[in-house]
Amino acid sequence: MPPFHPTLKGHITMSRFRPRLRLAAAATATALLGLTAAACGGSAEAGGSGGGSGVVLKLKDPGNEGPLAYAKREGILEKRLKSVGARVEWGGSYASFTATIDAVRSGSVNVLEGAISPALGYLANSRNIKIFSFTDPVTGADAPREDGLVVPAGSPVKSVRDLVGKQVAVNKGGRGEYLLLLALEKEGVPVDKVKRVYLNPVQGASAFATGKVDAWWAIVQAYPEVVAKGARTLVTSRDLPDKDLNIWAARNELLDRNPKAVQAFLDVLRELTEQEKRDPAKFQNVFLQKGPSAVSGPRLADNIAKARVQNVPRNAGGDDGQYVSAVSGVFRKHGVLPVDIRPQDVIFDLRTAKP
Image (cartoon, rainbow, N blue to C red; front, side, top):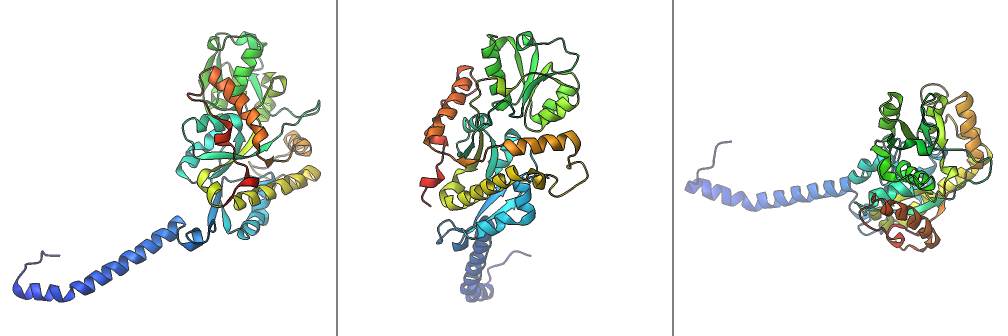
């Protein structure tokens, strides 16, 4: 458009339309603000005048097994959250808590599962989440092993003491590093005599398979998979004074705006976990019976066995501070955490929360 030349006629013409232009600009700005607020979850619907209504629980994709996969297929969370002014969004797939961190930072995930150790590793740098649920460990002789320090079948390493001078893959500031430190302490091995190689679960699996590390603390689904391929286990968390409980955490703004929605999520998770304990087969291969995400044979049998004896997630409370302090103490002792993390700063009791 050519520049405007302020002739007298042009000046009079533009003056005539300036009030209309201002009104149009104001209307446009108002509309844009409305669209922006809607996109960001603003307005009364998102809590402007309706308290915590309109919040969104953003979860990673639950995969093909477990209570949340079943809840997604049946639309259970959608129904329960609607009654407390919230809804759910299912996001991408992540192998572990550590792998989900970037999604938490960006806000694309705001409710996630993991363990105390990686949560503390994250909280050392970002205080935007709190733990709202713990799951007590399964005890007893028949309790399944769900992680382990593994070496190749033909490795000369026969015990933890043989790791001196070796390289061990662990997830930085996570459960793998915590358990390795506990194992070294128990065997009296100076931690600086064993090199910790920081890798996420996918990277750890690759480094172990290609011989780039001597050992690996495999966790989550990686452990049964690597054992099935012939890896030999040196020690598991069951052999150690492990205080690192499974947890659920959420971003602070979600907990502050609508704790009832987070409690509704936890209630659904508890109910479905109880159902899975009674009928675990129903919660396997939820979406697909065949394909890469489906399980069968020994792996299916192992999943069912674990589901039968699992404990049900519970609300976090003041007594859980002992577990946070125990894990934090190990990390602080060995310089993993740069700062002290107080339990009261990272535990959120939904039962006493006020929206």
